[in-house]
Amino acid sequence: MQRNHETGAALAFHNATKYVVVRDEAGEEQLLMGTPPDLENPIWQEDWSLEPFPFKIYETLAPIRLPRAFPPSSLPALEAIARTGAEPIGVIVPDLAALARIGLLANGLLNRQRTSQSGATIEYRTAGGTGARYHLELYFVCADLPDLAAGIYHYAAQDHTLRQLRAGDFRGALVEATGGEPPVAHAPVMLAVTSTFWRNAWRYKGRAYRHTFWDAGTSLSHVLAVAASAGLPTELVLGYADAPVNALLGVDGEREATVALCAIGRMNDSTARTPTVQAQDYPTRMISSREVAFPIIPAMHGASSLASGPEASTWRAEPGRRVPPAPQGTLISLQPLSADQLPPEPIEAIIPRRRSTRHYDTAVEIPFQAFSTLLDRSSRGFAADCLAPDAPPLHDVYLIVNGVEGLAPGVYLHHPRRNAVELFKEGNFRQQAERLAARQGYAADAHVNCYYLTDLSTVLEHYGNRGYRLAQLGCSLSAGKLHMGTHTLGLGAVGSTSLDDEVIAFFSPHAAGKSYMFITVFGKRRRTSRQ
Ligand SMILES: Cc1cc2nc3c(=O)[nH]c(=O)nc-3n(C[C@H](O)[C@H](O)[C@H](O)COP(=O)(O)O)c2cc1C
Image 1: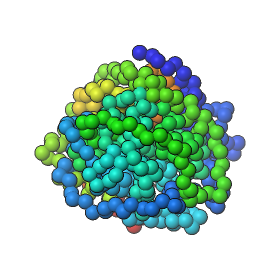
Image 2: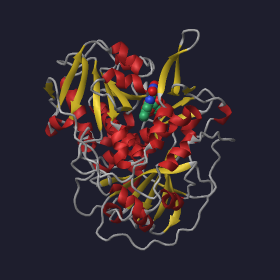
Image 3: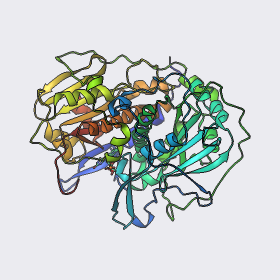
Image 4: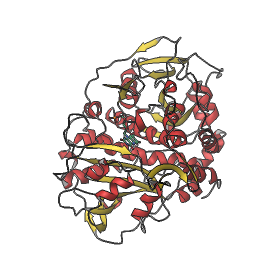
């Protein structure tokens, strides 16, 4: 089963970017990053004049207008969220409106702004992102679509348009780079997600590389739900040769690099011959007058890169199949809403009102059915080139329950296959929840904290350093589904950062040996003048 034993880079990166709280000489607790004794201040953000501009603007390419109003889809949002992408059958080719919808609802602008400390305007996006330091870009590599000529297009979030980077059908280059992955060969559209690391690292230093996959997974959870609502099949593709994909998009692979691909739609004929890929370097607007290097990012990205299509194909050849933990204690069956009880609103009605909720109403509990529905619908997985369709997720979801009707406050484990939660220990853990979430009070107030923990060493033993991308993305994608889901039920959520090793200690002995990957908290919003 093992094909790539090199895992040292990923483990070293993970250790070097842990958050810890340490007492300084004056006895004050300080949040630091790393593993003792190698600790550093976790936040850079030193020079506000360098605050990166959060858009990629091609200065010389003409915009292609996209529709903003779409006919409503008929699938209830929670049904779209729960889909894995493998469900639709037959030939389904997206049109320009489908690309517009995906671009807007996964990386486009919301109609919400605020002014940053430097006086810059922060324009909020449809998908949340660490620190609102939006660093992702979307590209579509298309066959001839009903109303769009074959080509490679960049989705420009700032004005909701496309820019054509190449004319012609270049999908064959992706088939080659992925080692002939069948859904890629039959996809009329391939979505490529890139990160311009500096746009996040300006604040978060090396931890930005974790955020790359946290934010990409969050955004991809929107892509999958929006595609599902349009009846489009999807498959996430993490096995690809990095350099040719970056060259195809015209990105350098170091400042800006492809971090995930997603096949969208299905057509009968497999891809045509790709024209020769000429080097391309269109001028784009400068995002900072100077950029600061955080070498751990290119080092980790390089260490998790694949060199060729055959290497990509070998990498995914035998997907890992983990045995989820067997319950050892009391199981409580979940009672999710059935398909015909789901709120009817479609996903495109939900996403524009999504936002991070940091104020929770501690005076009320949330219904057990809402809790059950969210766990159920967010945990049904996603189709990916490197995962077996029926395999359990690579992570486990540990819960701190503070306020759910009929459920004793305490610590639980979600068993998605059994549609149940297992009680570990009863008690009020609000104070601990706040501390674990890097001392952010909203975790204490939220009705539920969901911790996504992974046995990282085992995942890496199977998938090598490349598995780090998969491990992070799998967690954030599930959490992104959960976040969207909360808004369908009149609740809210927020992602968070956490104190890595303290989280594991808190959930141990059960979680011993695992790694903290991600957390989302959710619950009933408390109305305030500012959210
Ligand atoms: C992966 C992830 C981690 C986040 N971590 C935190 C956090 O630790 N603290 C916090 O206040 N907000 C956190 N957020 C929320 C972001 O700050 C928020 O998404 C961003 O400011 C945009 O605002 P919006 O989600 O309301 O659109 C996180 C969001 C994501 C997607």
